[in-house]
Length: 139
Image (cartoon, rainbow, N blue to C red; front, side, top):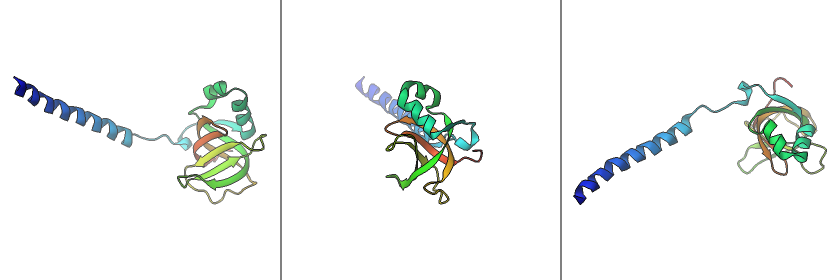
């Protein structure tokens, strides 16, 4: 009797392992969203930062995980820990702003220039965070 149960465990384990691998493969291979293929909300960096500074919950309801095109003056260009280009757009706050992680490095971006970057809003830390940004073709 005990041996019969042991033999039933192996097929169940194999089936479970197959299910886990199928879920992992699907999540790895599923199509990724591209900000350039979606319509966007247009907003100035100053206004976006103000919205998050005044009422983060309300701003999240309007912008979180949505594609937004943010227009502002480039205060700083640097690389993050993953080697991605990070563009900080200035706001009315002297220290914090809108931090845009670029999808691909863009050598044409220069400190002091005004630009519009389009990407996915990830919310608010000390900066408003926008990920997978690209220079918007429709500023």
